[in-house]
Image (cartoon, rainbow, N blue to C red; front, top):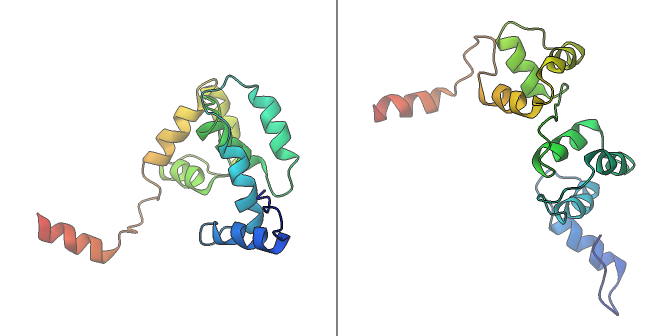
Length: 144
């Protein structure tokens, strides 16, 4: 949380926080993000303790905690079964994409579920339906 300088007011601090956020990002997330970013990703911290503390913060849920474990804490076993990209990637491979089935299937990938997650995110995300922007396809044809 931004702390106003002496003589400053809380409204100025709130405006600074709101101005520093990404488009579409909530004020709450803009305040919480820097707290997480201050941590050194090379630290050998207790990931479970960090996850527990993050879940205690209003507005932080399991998806966000798993993503922070993956990206900021370097957890090789983080998995996001409710992630839309994961669900679509599983369905594109003919597998059930509901979160319960995804979580159950991912148990076989322990302790390396983060790598499976990256693999799913990098692969096809649709079930055969062409979602290519026609303008991009035309540009590719012109370049070839």
